[in-house]
Length: 303
Image (tube, rainbow, N blue to C red; front, side, top):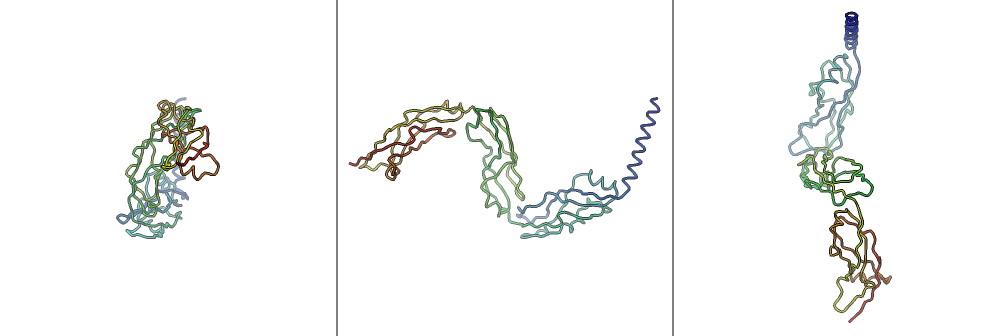
């Protein structure tokens, strides 16, 4: 029984191989996606023009040759910019001969796109800060207690002048995190920019995530700044209270003398309502939730 089973399996495998050999001898059409690579840039030049990452070749050939194209080693479809600069319009068909990895007996029916249009520009350098692209979701009651620490804080970007001069920051690839409730250390890859090189490709990020709580401060005196020597301003009342919100570790270290409440004399003079709103100078990483009273009445005395 076992011998018959082996004979049956061998027959099936032989039949499959025979069928495959016959089938792969026929001619077929297929599409092959190949990475597009521009070469032979003049020294100190690049392009930031939007270009396709791949070209699609529609080819005709014997089945076994088409299979070898699809499963073989990855290859680039190289297009030369011919050591030139300025506006370039290039036919992709012109570089079939220079891409030797294409088998000679495979017929190229079409290439998409068949034409490339781009601008070759001089490369400049500029130091720019990072802008992490993060989508953060926190557990209820938690949040960022401080600014995100980015290391390094900036990067030297080299790229086409027309794009570089308008850049104010370099973004990272988007990353998402959910149910955050504790300190997070992670890394982020820089977002790809065509024609650019960076002094670093990866940055490290530290997110100080804490339970967010409130804390009340009372009897904070309000100053009036820039009063002329012959004037005096009486505030009614002359003290305020407010709630601040922030990370539990941050608020635990806060003291009253880290806050300052004040009004500019000029704002009092320009007021037409009979009351003014004090400004609150506060430490980083906390927010004012409410101010009481929101407006203060005043009396101006002259000497």
